[in-house]
Length: 399
Image 1 (cartoon, rainbow, N blue to C red):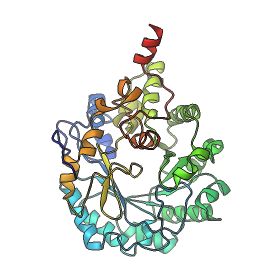
Image 2: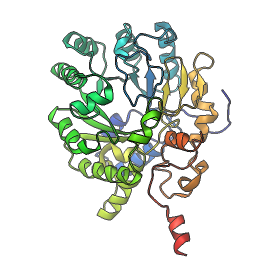
Image 3: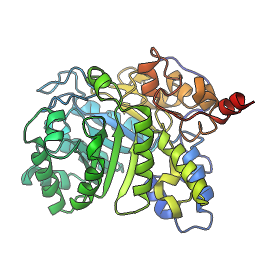
Image 4: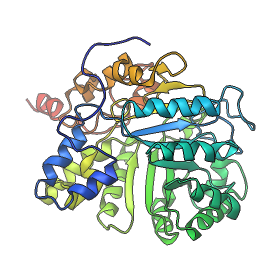
């Protein structure tokens, strides 16, 4: 791991500390909520807030858009052991108390997953589980709840056959719904994650209503990133940038209905669109008007979140394959504080192309993973799926 001098990650200076949900509850009725929300969003001290851990590469599905190329039907020999997993969790605590998302692969493939969850909870971490839902029956749901996991996300990438086709398993949609209902019976909050691409863009309104009808606590949409298996379907499945823009604009409009918590992920443009729309509407962006969306921004890779692979590699996010370090070689705190990759991503002034001159760069930053895949591995290049032309460009043309 190469080190780079500069302001390390760590605890915030002046900004509210804690998970976004906890801080939102603290400040939403505060007269100074707008300022505190801005401080939390800016995150000057690079407080680590969310860690996605690939507990195993093993999975029972072979999804067409999976970020992995080497998905296995069995557990991997180089998955972190239970002892190594606990040591990794201890390392996170040296930096802060981020939300820990147990993902995969399919995390329920690991026989010790609930022991790991209990250990993390005992250390004071908020733990979530990201699953495809197909392995969740009544007994499994009880184990999830009993382990102390506080939220479960289930991936539904369309309605019925649309989902099944992408997941390459007939009946996987119904199995996921069954799992969701078993969890809900026990009071577990379940959010729906949905990757949006050409295969399901025609269903976006149905997907939204379906999430409401199913009683999900949240709908998080993920705009397809061409990574892993997704590279092979990118040409066929990536949305046209204009459709991308229209979809995020629609998502902003439905967020105002407040029927369900909504979040756009791997879609940093959303936070530019949100500000453009709010300006048109003559309203300020505050926790009271825009909820938790007022407290966060576009690409958080390497500044507020990171991804740890099943081998212990540390990446900015699960879609950007630029290694920042490895917990087998270095302490996590050293990686988080001094990785050159993270230092680059924490500097929006180092962005290139139109992202570098965009007036929204500090609230958007563009998707660094899409830049990596479309710009020959340069993750600081401009976002290739953005139609917005910065003022500096339009002024130059106009002048």
